[in-house]
Image (tube, rainbow, N blue to C red; front, side, top):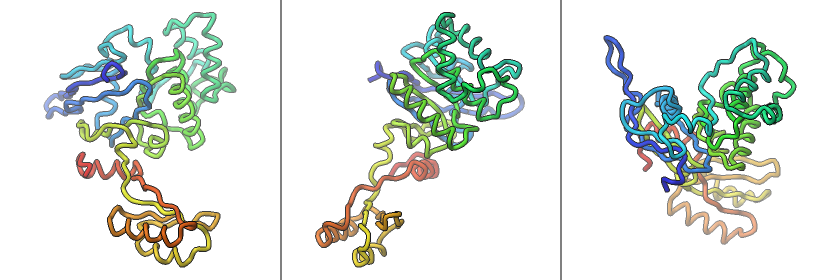
Length: 312
């Protein structure tokens, strides 16, 4: 339902005009609806139009045509800004300020009452694991530390909607894991999250909805579980079942052995494969378990980009 959407765009287009050069169409009639309470991954290769879309949503640039609404109001509505947490791509902060001083200024701009501001700053610094560096100058921070401070200011006002442009950029694997926990924690509080990212494995882990853009056009959009539909079968073969393994391994697409000695085999989706697996279960009921095998987001992403949006 549109009333349950936190972001709605209809026919959104953006054309950049250049002096003495051909115009560039960064967005081409983008229509999207982001469900309330979702973690929505906004995906696409470089130049797809992700940052342009986010800038329009934040009213940093104007669309050439079409409309954009955020939290039920036009994207240019000033009142709605206080309900959004925003992290731009490659944020820049004053190097002479400490982390606490910077967040205190942000708190004042967000009109957080002084009696609540200090406690809130301490909470967000703790959430992004930057409490030990509260009094350190931002100019001494690494790229990953700057990104953490950027996330801290984005959640400072306890927003209804988080809009994050490449928030995982610059974070090491440990930092990315912590960030994912922050996002899921914000979702648990009722916050909707809309973010772009190139790290597809992390998107697959935390997002429930995704959209994929290429060259300014929407290629697909929906629930990630629906888009990554069952594409075959997975068989788990118990340890020490060599006869069963020999029957199956020649037809498997992939095989991998677990530490406990069991094997995982994946198969394409065909009537012959289904018949073979059914016979294997009948013959070795205690030694094999069959389940649906789902396509990885990375494989789906490259297939969609290569096929220009064709999902079949």
